Image 1 (cartoon, helix red, strand yellow):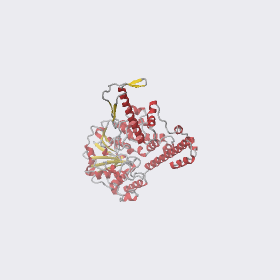
Image 2 (cartoon, one colour):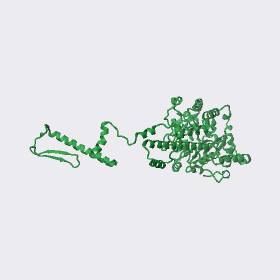
Image 3 (cartoon, helix red, strand yellow):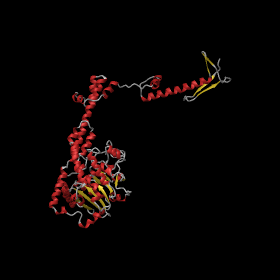
Image 4 (cartoon, helix red, strand yellow):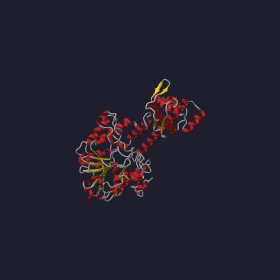
Length: 537
């Protein structure tokens, strides 16, 4: 007979101790059938059983926490490790026929002739409960309902884009009224024809000790907001020179507005393009490019009706093509910035402003920024908390599927923004930026507008490539005209806010929570403003 042996198992199951009784040999032999087991083997077996017991306990606890169906410990263990040992995956509880039906391509003819599908999830559930269909019928009806709703959503999105395109491309009645009344004032009121600036202030126009700003616009109300916000927030308004450039038809109304609404002590100059000697000499590249661009777009695009009629393109692509038809992108005011060194040959540095911005701080510190020999001081648009707005790279504007673009540029390179730019005109005159701009415009026209679709920013990204100095995002917050994710508090914290996009603040489609940032610079008690029914909301 074997002598007694003591076995100690700790409560946590972490330790197993085998203690032989006094006088027991180190290695015992136990007769089990025809085999003999050593004491050491018994010890290892006990260790293995202890580990297995703990493993089963953990799996059981996990099953309980996960809320799975009740099962025995061995059953749960088999369920967990069985398929893995055999190299098999657990069977899906969704019938395979449902996947087959949902993955089948939709037939356009079938979608047009099929019966009306449920319009809501509640209707679908009620119909399924009443009919108790099999899995295939369930999948067919579900797919039909989802497909129909997708088609309606697409149509609704395209209609929204079309309406926004029409609203943003048209001149509001109130703005047209203001221009007509100002033109009348210019012809009948001598106070509306004052020389701007007055003769004693003319030397300031070429004096580089002043802070020179350039605004190109044919929108009188928008220009008035930019000018008012600039002067009101400037620490030394007497050192401001604002050069306003407009076209021939808007020159008289623009002159009348700033004659009747002086922004003393700032110096305001209003000039039409026809007043620039350089611009009237010979054929100017910007005019040639605009003529060709307009002709190419009329042939290539086919108008808004043809764009909307496309049944295969995604709504965002259709929206981009509609935006390309906007008059803004074929406006001389939009292209003129590439000729700033020639338009202002006596100036060393200027800040160029778009007419859809609002200035909320003193901009004089922009002149203290060291440009490090660069030409264009701009805010980058690929870094920032707002991933929707600040996610623009070269690939966002240029077509990298075209070999000419892919060969010369990096799609991941960070883009920058037009709208509030510091231009070092001295450094600019040392470069071939303007010639590069027109070379690529010609290449885009030759390729049927396949290098990029719209605007002056894509050729600007190319022309100023290597000549851009990044400035702090505080100086230029973007996106207030195409998204309302920006809160009022965030917008108020920026130095300059930009309503780039279709929802301009002077239109009814403007975002109501952001529009007050613009309307605060409009005097709604002004006689001309009131007579044209221009209101804050």
